[in-house]
Structures are given as structure tokens and as C-alpha cells.
Image (cartoon, rainbow, N blue to C red; front, side, top):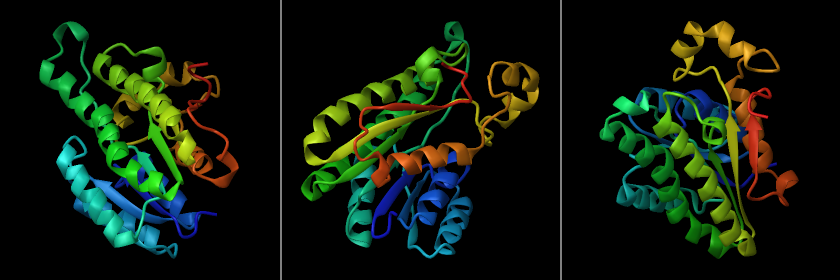
Length: 246
């Protein structure tokens, strides 16, 4: 379905990003895996993609660094010949109550989660516009839709991602480039494991489907949004949350 297409996936070494890499690889896409620091995990994920019969390479990059992203996108284009799919998944948390939150913790989350997505869109957009084709998916969160106590920075960044998604969708639609967002709820990853284990009953009680999601649930949504089946969908926010934020 995605054969002869190259997908950049940021934060692709583990968790939701790893699941997205593997699902897009199953659909035939070559994978440019962007990661922050865990080289071993990134290489393991890339090797798992290669085992599915596609090309996969790893690129270490701080998504918050505008110039570093520019360089890595240029390298990916040189290595793969083009970019048809961009999945902005890289994200961090620095949770804490608003009244005591450090400015540095607010800035770090905005820089990675929101500016990081902008940086990749900014540098990939010229490639997609020239080709008159592209599929962009930004990973937001239900926290960006409904807010979450102790996550003013994270909620703000993910709400910003939704605004960025809609503006991008409007600007690029004429060039056959779609831009959508996926808003996961509670997904079982390294980032959420401690929270889920500590508050398992309360969390599941808040989810109509009565269970925490899996990374693969998000990956399937991303796979749909970059597929030919979603060619007439842009500017949409698809919740993958078991009904939690409806």
C-alpha cells in the first residue's frame, strides 16, 4: 500500500514511535527513523523494519534544534530520494503543578513537542510541495483537547500541535499534501507505565472501553491517515482514546 514511499518518523525508537515504524514498514514504506539518544533502541527498531523487507536508517537529531532538523531532512532526502510521509511523534513530559512549574520545564516541553513538529514540517514541506504529494501526521494527545492537571506544559504543547495541524492542512491542501493529527489517550508505553501502575483502577474507570490502549492502536490510526483510503481527509483530529475524551 505504501510501497516506494519514504516515511520520516520522529521519536521512532520505542513506544508509539516504534509501533508506527513497524506498521508503516508492514505496509511497504521505507523508514527514516529519527531519535534523540537511545541508539541501541533505534537500531533495534530499524532492524525489525528491515526484516519486513524495507529500507530503514536511523538519524540522531534534537528535534528542538531548527538547523539540526534542516540538516537531517536534507540527509534523509539524499539517502532515500524523497519524503512522502512525515509522522511527528517525538515528545517529552515534565509534569508538575502549574503553581510550582519551572520555566525551563515549560520551555523544554514546548520546544520538543510543538516546535519540534514545526521544524520538521517546515523543512519537509518544500519537498512535498515540489512533488505535489505528501502525508503529514502529528501526534497530539487528549490532554491537548481537554487539559490535564499537572500537565499545563504538555497540554499546551499538544493543543498547539492541533492548531499547527489545521493551519498546515489549509496551507498545503492545494499541493495535495494532507495534514492530520492523532490524539491518543492513555497508551501503555515507557512514558506512562509508572502512572498507569500507580492509578490503574482510576484510569480504566475513566475510559469507556475499560482498558488502556496499546501503541499498535495509535499506529493503525496513523497508517490509515497516510494511506490512499484517507486521501480526502485533512485537518482532522482522530482520537484514539477508548472514548475517554468524547
